[in-house]
Length: 83
Length: 531
Image 1 (cartoon, each protein chain N blue to C red):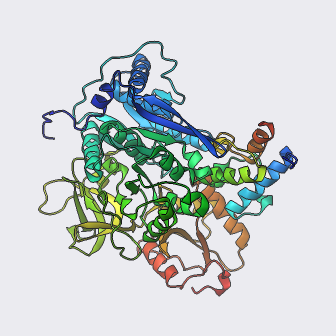
Image 2 (tube, helix red, strand yellow; image 1 turned 30 degrees about the vertical axis):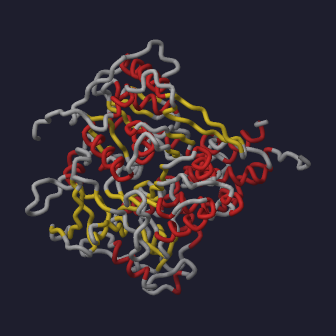
Image 3 (cartoon, rainbow over the protein chains, first blue to last red; image 1 turned 60 degrees about the horizontal axis):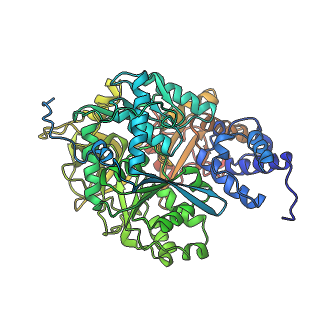
């Protein structure tokens, strides 16, 4: 794979943007530490984001990742640490 | 109550489990994906039986008969063994979602309090159980409580439908009859097991009728919706189903080349239930998956709710979807022994064929009330019609009976369905009022637009209000409180939200005004809105 691995901060930015789009909010309004469901993002939509994440990363992402690591910061950290 | 002359339950879930002793044929499989590939772990009927006994032993060790046990293990074998272990040992199971966030944890805590539960199972326990557990199941009376089905809707007051063994057996019989289910069938499901459709349709129906089912985690479906039909093809499944939105997702998030590679010719019953069933959803699904051999005759729209275990009416197998009325398809005919009436609730009378009104249901599948909530139980389960001897369940849905078939037009004015969850409009309005400190009235309602049910919020914003801040506050209130993103937030001039003479929000009148274009559309500023 020629694409360099995104850093944790790249991951945060991607997830923050995707979350903002799903919620129709500006990215600045997203608090990285706040849990997805506290934004009213139904867990089903958070999980759907991980399909797009797989496409962007070019590698599989655990389907339950967005449930088990349910904030921008936690999901980015999980993905940055995952092999 | 008439004395229960116990003739034995039929179908009998516990008896069917016990009959699996020594049987190495598969009972359940669980599929997991890593990128595009999946593998299935299978459990034989004998392994299922042994796991249920071990779970029952572990549950018996720390509870007494009749105690509530919250089953919140993740979807999979752990959940199945724990749930059935409760029934095996005569405990009352309370299916719930595994809590992964602070909000989910708070909801679970409320369930535990409402049910006075002492045991909460959040992780599989059958593997760790030390002994083999009770060899034989309890022999439940028909009126013994099997489980409590909570609907995850209103966060204010979780209500658990009390499901007896008799009601469960009656409903399973209706499901098997509608779709001619038997040992030759094979199921595939991604539905969450703590909802009625996932619990009864995906877990208990296969056990009761002796066919294997392959399950997948709901997240595996949501991540890549095309995995669901792909698994049906790989397993050569005959029986599967989901709420309406899942069929749309499959079409929207898959590509034609991938679809055409599947063979869905074995799929003979495609249940669509738990949400209003849209004619255009069925048509585009049948078209998109036609090249994969999917037959439109398999489409089986149905109507049901947790208060009736799962099933009330359905199109029977092989008939396909009937003709649509106003974008809504027929949900078929009632199960044998089930009575459906369309009622004018203000006059308390049944309406004739073709008239629209409240949907009332009576029959052997109806829950015997809400757990520990006499007022709500009487209101929902104690409805009467002149000249009819039995009480009816008020479903909260609005529908039409036409030629004996039921068409669901939508929810009653105060309930909104979002992805299978019931949300009370009054709760949404209250949350918004709190967030905006009572500035301006709010009406929340579902609205069918282009055959899609949309959640519309109309909020009165005074001239000069900071529109962005108001929208953010509304989004925040619905998010934090309810997990909901509304489809439309219309900010309108004061007076736009209609009220009754007693000052209550008149949602139907507000909706009619909104539909007629009398209120601000989201693209208009409030200065342009009609009052």
